[in-house]
Length: 247
Image (cartoon, rainbow, N blue to C red; front, side, top):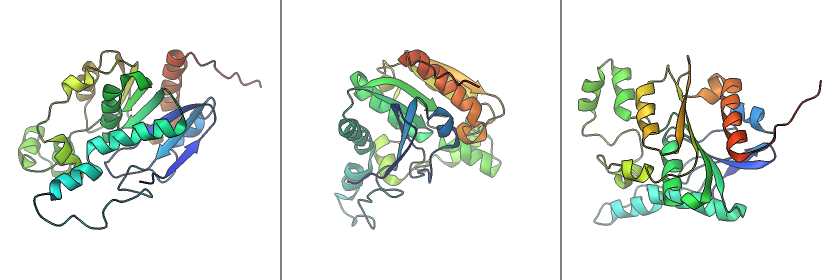
């Protein structure tokens, strides 16, 4: 399994887990340049999308094993396993993880599964609910949106949906995350601040930072403010000395 990657900056590695699933960045985020000293942001394309290996050129043949094949090759356990594989390739005992949207869930679940290998966690607009986006797009109320997508898999490929389970409860797993965590949420996002606060409340050592007027991509909409929030959190958590620029 080949995972494409690109990076920005030098210094302490920060592994970025993109959203979607299946929406890898074509280039490093705009905020990455502002974090590039003393941090090195590593962006990788998750398996099955972008320039990384695609386990299937077409869907598996229908049959008893089709779903299990999808799950094994593209499900959540495979994505969590990829982060662990990247950690070993980097030769790091501990990682700093930054996950956006659905990638926030992957990063948090990795931190739950391997708490001893995570130093700090940044979750950006983590794991939005598909019903919220569907309701906004169709003009339905949130309740009507929930009803409309009750039989759908959500905003994710079949493999991810199969591995999650439509009604799977991740609260117990998230409560096992021990690393300091920063949750960043825009107050103009379709996912509400209240939903982000609900996610934050499941994490034992987390705080929420709300960015006014920002939607779902704060690292592009307000890169300077986003970088400031992340830098302050990581500098404090990792005790990284600030670089003073002489003018």
